[in-house]
Image (cartoon, rainbow, N blue to C red):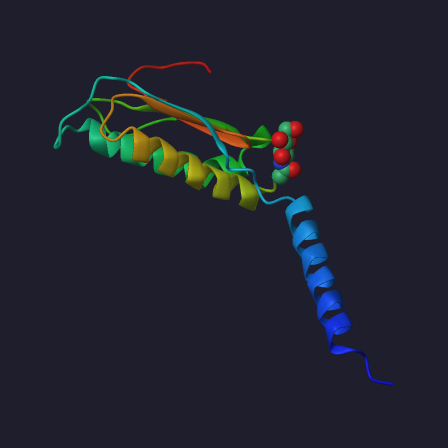
Length: 137
Ligand SMILES: *[C@@H]1O[C@H](CO)[C@@H](O)[C@H](O)[C@H]1NC(C)=O
């Protein structure tokens, strides 16, 4: 007995939707941006602070997924114009998803706050911040 073509199509659509729902439910990180804040002060091209910010932000993205509780603070290694960073991910994320979320946080932060002396991005599942001074949140 042949299965009517329309019913087969409907079944395939239903099965695909179910798989899609399961994929979402199983936990892609929620990278919805809640807030991006930029310091109004900028630094100029060639300022050594630029390299320090680049280092700190890349290190936050790479190292936070491997840290206890996904909570990691760092300082740039180059003297002069130190940059201080901090990043967190929701503990319900996998390490890989933490990295994915922080990549999105970095893009949101640097995209909105180009060449600023301080910035932060708060996403639903993670957050990232850097400043010229030590801070504790
Ligand atoms: C993790 O928990 C937060 C807060 O309860 C929630 O908004 C988010 O969707 C969860 N993320 C994942 C990947 O389960």
